[in-house]
Length: 179
Image (cartoon, rainbow, N blue to C red):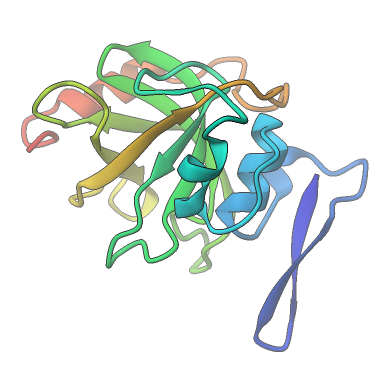
């Protein structure tokens, strides 16, 4: 497990103390996704899809414990990776990830069981909207996704004991949540 420490302007990953929990993490999405999923890939988030080829099974259907790989875009120049904590229904799932929403004005914190909504025209998880703390609902941006990487050993702290399934469905299906 890793935590982030800042030295000057550089963010450095450091091992988490044994007593620290997954959700205490503050730092980048990549070390968090590696610790939360057990998938041992390194490098920028957008490179995970290619790096997984031949090492891990990959696909376009979410599974609990799989890593979703967001493509590199102008808004996500390094991409993003997150771990599927729950599949709610065919177009809605929950993620556990780090470095997405701001908490107390700071990015990097871990968030557990946040809503992800498939807004792709073909229902293939190629485009999604992500729950964003500042708006207390799905953000307005649509993000392209490469797919899901399978085969790690997810952390037992990946999901809460009582996730808000109803809230996730409301987030996804309120008017205007989709395209």
